[in-house]
Length: 121
Image (tube, rainbow, N blue to C red; front, top):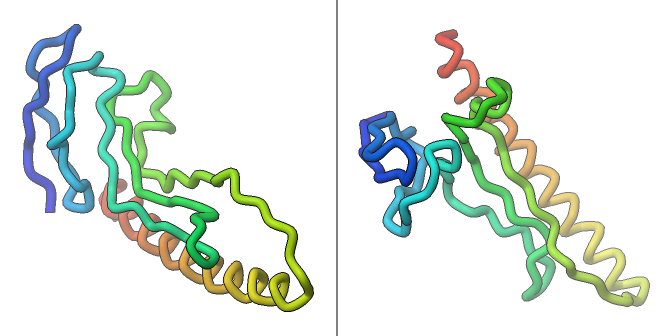
């Protein structure tokens, strides 16, 4: 469920905008330019053992110039993890990546539902 929030900006003063229900909030917001306002969802850390391999989160940049980038998307970051593995380690990594692929597909399904809602479908 969306609700309106007001955030200070350096170039447009206070800006009121709808905050998507999936956004984790703006408690750490520091005034910036309006174009830099971003909604960010919960981080999904996709790990192997104690190391993060990927971090994924819903994002939306409502004021960027490119209309395609204003839509909600899934931001995915790769970490700098690397390791030399034995055959069992490679198998464990492959199994872990399979699980992470399933998680990413679930996030894609969530994103598709959000995209349909944004498009009024």
